Amino acid sequence: MVHCPECDATLERQEDVEFGDMGAESGFFEASERFYLVACGDCGAAIGSGVAGAR
Image 1 (tube, helix red, strand yellow):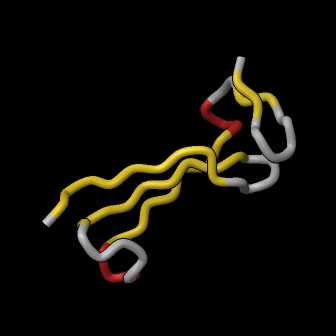
Image 2 (spheres, rainbow, N blue to C red):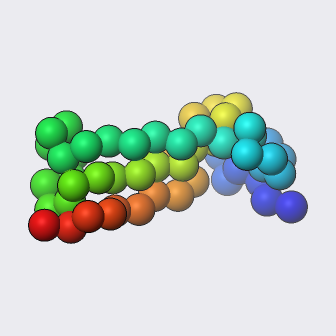
C-alpha cells in the first residue's frame, strides 16, 4: 500500500490519483512534446511525473 508523502492519504485505486497531461505549448518543459504528472487525489501533491516524445 502506498501513501501520499504530503497528507498520508492511502493510494490504492486509480481513483485515488489524478493524471495530468501538459503539452509543449504550455512552456513548462521545453524539450518535450508531452509532460505527464501524477498527483494525490486528496491534496493535489505531485507524486510522480514523466516526459514523453522528446524533440
